[in-house]
Length: 222
Image (cartoon, rainbow, N blue to C red; front, side, top):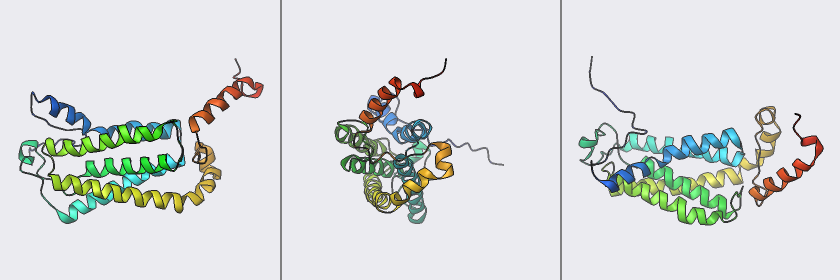
């Protein structure tokens, strides 16, 4: 029986001791994990909106496509993989880059089309937060030695392409059944809803919460 140990690579990111930039970029490299576990899980628990749920589904599908391409191409990681103990996995395309650029693309298209806008200036979030995080994630994978430049650019290109395609599929095809999902027994049971037709969701929820407070039928019984 082999005594070799393997790490869970989902959160296992290495950097050179004493390298402050490497330490920062190691945390940046974990942004996809934070988005998946913190963002989309929280979204389902607290909001359960169809646009967000299909956004998450698209990320899962894109990750599956990226991993399938890796298995087919089987391009090795850079030589630094020995130090990182990552030589048993393939590098083209970079899954981290693919994930972040899919996320940035879909988020930007949702914002541009005003689908489920939460923040009044959400387009600024896309330009000054989401895209810089995507670029930093791509850079981190090269800097930390997990990928070559070609591998991260391949991942970014794939992410942008899949993000555009999935946005079109959801909003030109799947969106037609949003109402049916909303009115289904499961939709009603889990309070699944579509709010993409509301121009300013934050303002809508704020005004309705204030109105409900004044309405006797909404008051909580003591």
